[in-house]
Image (cartoon, rainbow, N blue to C red; front, side, top):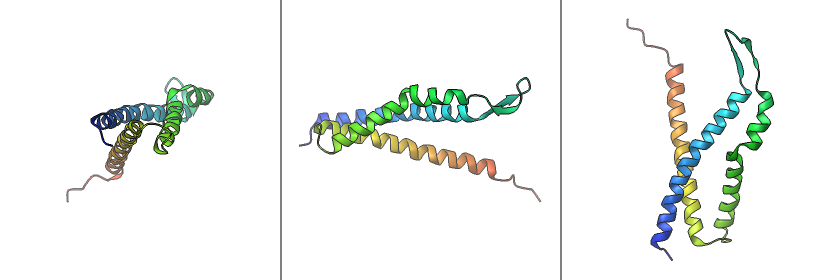
Length: 123
């Protein structure tokens, strides 16, 4: 049966999903940074310098652990191993994550399109 607390849990899960997405994107950027080439004027030619940090970033960062716990808890919730309120919470959480993923994809597509488009020639 629907209750106002279930809706509140869904809204709370939505906002938790939005905040999780920011942490997830930071972790993805951190992973990309540790695997990319670093160089500069005083560093010399670009070369891979942070490959030693990849295991630490991949294993010790809390985001992959939270993602795994969220997936497992969501699976249990959607298969009636937890209360109905948890289903609303995790539904809102994944809805928030999905919304932010779509928003990020649209923004990245726009940025890529602007970078690859050539400036118009006035003739």
